[in-house]
Length: 333
Image 1 (tube, helix red, strand yellow):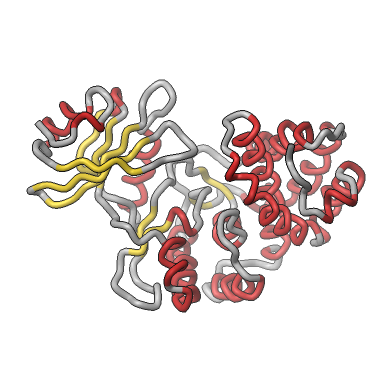
Image 2: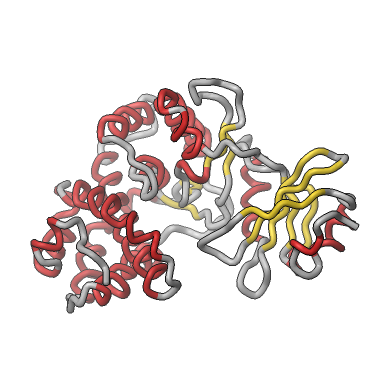
């Protein structure tokens, strides 16, 4: 049997024994925003990461499917060593401790190198057809932006025109959806907390590993750029954002609509995140997310200045009071 098996949910020790990891040391890793839990394993076979995605709250199959597809296409997803979908157990490669966000906190001089590597990692995925994933379509975009009117507006004591909000977004996103076509693989949460630095380069430009991609869809290539460069959890300067967008465009993947589409998806994603962070606080009692809202709101305000967002900008002007807008979204009660 494995050491520290009392740290595992029921069935974990048996899964490890069957996978050939009996006798390993188990160290739980703190989690936060989902039912998934992670455990670091150390034993005679080296190191590995154990993920528990317990049904019915979680299903590890999407993670398994996306990880295997990414690996087949040359992207650096963790290897899958063993899995038991029915019980929610997955044994994967351990990418170590150098999460990009944490590494940059201690190595700010490596910021340009790390972000350049993150931009370049997207390029091969954007040169090929999207994986066999559901489309990032209008119903999905609509459901996501509605989180702002469903959670943020009530939390602020605002009565807003919810139907007008949907109509404004439909008008704004219509041209983008027509241009999106079949799209590319969109990882959806591609940012500094979900990128692991695997290489030895002191400037952050080494190999990078991908995690938390189980919600991948087939969508617009600008979406993951927004995730990375308008990061809800880490300050990315306007100068670095512009530099990295120029880097991406240098690969010949952008067209004349790139700036508009980037702003559209920036505002869409940031509206969604404001709603999600409000929900995490109001429903789940996770207060720490409130401190992130001003950063997200500020990025959304910049996006709304683009002419492509005119219908949405008019809605915000009519429904979110000026004093709250100047407070970058106000203080959620």
